[in-house]
Amino acid sequence: GGALGADFIAKGKPDGYTVYATTNSTLTIITAMQRDLTYRLTDFAPIGSTMADMGVITARSSAAWKTLEELVDYAKKNPGKLNYGSAGLGTVSFFTMELFKISYGLDIAHVPFQGTGPVKNAILGDHVHLASSGFGSMAPLIKSGDLIPLVTTAPKRVAGFGNVPTMAEKGFPEASLNIWMGLYVAAKTPKPIIDRLVRALEQTMKDPAVVSAVEKAGMLVDYHSPEATRKLLESEHEGVKKVVARL
Image 1 (spheres, one colour):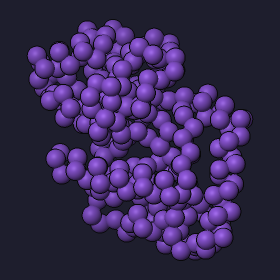
Image 2 (image 1 turned 180 degrees about the horizontal axis):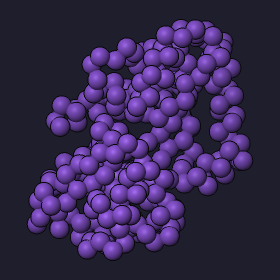
Image 3 (image 1 turned 90 degrees about the vertical axis):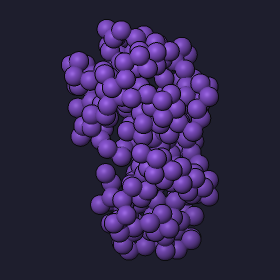
């Protein structure tokens, strides 16, 4: 789940030549779930966040439910009869669905897979009723009509998919856990080196070609400064710990 890479950076030479590119789960979710980790949040100096992929819950186009309301109604009337696939226990996709279940008080079984690819195969092959994943990875199947997006964890409705509601607008902003990427170096890296990397990243994320490539991949440019990135990590880490305790 990224822990090996994080450990390598945390214990590596703090010279700025090895940069850790990772999703938030490595630093906010795994650290909240595993007590035997060899690293902590304080072992890293953020260079900044780069891009984000909101979570989405999907169903096959042939499913009996076509909207979020229809799914919730069916699940409440049929507790324990539905299941969903995720990229694995403890991943963002797992927490997305578990937060959704808590929000609506639903009983839906979890079927963990080893990554997003197998989840796609499972939902298309009618092996699971629902899939929880990143929007970017499912966008081609949504555009083709194979899958129906029921709800996203985006802060606002996704451009081009204006009919898909968000958890926040449904009254559950705390259930909006997104997948976002960032760059980090070892905490003891000298400030001048960190500052140079920060300037480079800030300039890169303003490059029209980079922005276009990110958007074509179905993701959002979501740059945050080092200070803002650290605050985001800390607040998300605390939120995930509460969910872990509840689950």
